[in-house]
Length: 115
Image 1 (tube, helix red, strand yellow):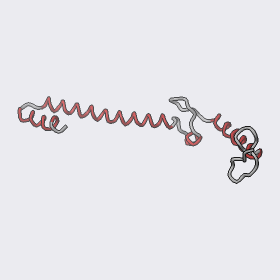
Image 2: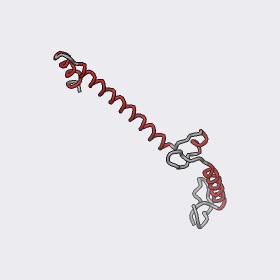
Image 3: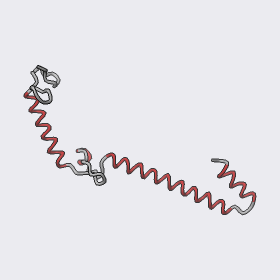
């Protein structure tokens, strides 16, 4: 018969379940019941509906970690997209402002040859 898998325990394990001795099996079941009671009270993520972790619930988070990371990535992408749009507008405005051949050459050096 296998031994209990708890460190330092030399008792024989129960013939069914998680390979714990009767004492540790009761402890395991008690911990599972506590966890399930806590899990039932946790809030859900506002975007995806997944349960929040206990730590996130205790902090008052509204989003799960994966939704927070996705939202942060979208924010960063939108920020850089707005920078690129602003750079494109400035490039077009400078081209429109180029009235002479010299200013057009300067625009070409600035925008076409530097990229």
